[in-house]
Image 1 (cartoon, one colour):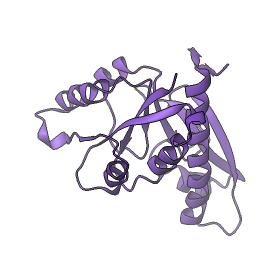
Image 2: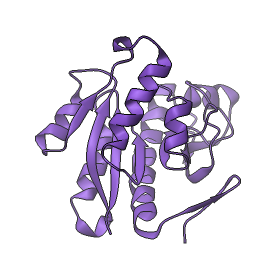
Image 3: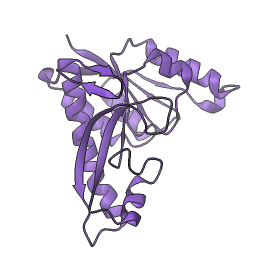
Length: 201
């Protein structure tokens, strides 16, 4: 069985493109069945539309409350009956309704080795701290900020010549590879979550 994946984007969709490219091979085990966004006119939606992948837009500003937006987004995604939901640069935090519907099925990545350096500035914070290695983390989203059960991590060395931009670009490469590899494994092999531990058979 091919796993159904809905991808949520807010920008250019480079990670989405990597997933679409991987899913073109039937052996990958996952199929991107829809792409959603929180704003119109972004490259991520265009990438999906070029391949005939259904898209939808759910803007926070169109709803009377964040809770109403969360409920509407939940229904948008649920309409495609996904096994996995991938946040690929999606810049909105989902709420309790969404998390309740897709518990241990929504995947996000972070450009640091969690639990170190959570939040918006992982590469900068790692560089400022003086670590010798950093990297990226893939996790199932929970109600916290970058606190969900960890699926995979990749290490990226910090070079003495790095500025934040250079370091972040190298992390992004590792992040895309990690996400594509892990979504394929989850799709083909399944997973269980026990407490904080994610097991892929």
